[in-house]
Image 1 (cartoon, helix red, strand yellow):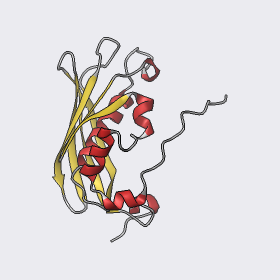
Image 2 (cartoon, rainbow, N blue to C red):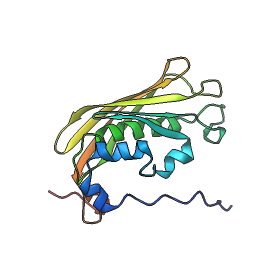
Image 3 (tube, rainbow, N blue to C red):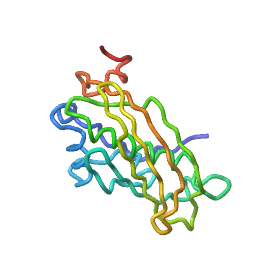
Image 4 (tube, one colour):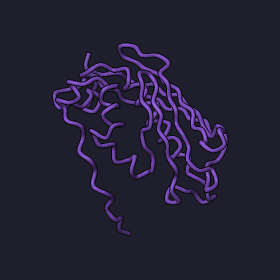
Length: 176
């Protein structure tokens, strides 16, 4: 069985850009369209809609391509939306030259997301931002009904960016 290639991935953000701009500034550039969103946002049908220090919101509508055999959005779609929002809430408080990577993700599903749900909103806020660890929480709510569909928490390791602009964790280990 062969797999058709997906859309071309947007380039990673330039290392110099990551060293010159803090997370909040980078997120504002994404919101304004000055920088391209990550390819997963287009693939899974969500977009960044609000950014402030310590708080981020995404909105999206799951396409039938992410439905499971029960005819509802796969839990992974909701988890990805919440993971993106919570990770960006963490990013929003980081200074230039500092990145993060998720070390733990916990999602609780409250109700299914289906064809009649319509758009949903993932809102996340920072809970703790330390030198090495940051945590955030998020809620996924139906825009039309205001009902909670899922909620979660994340822990992120905060790391200085390496020479190439990637975190030390993606280079094979953390640095002291």
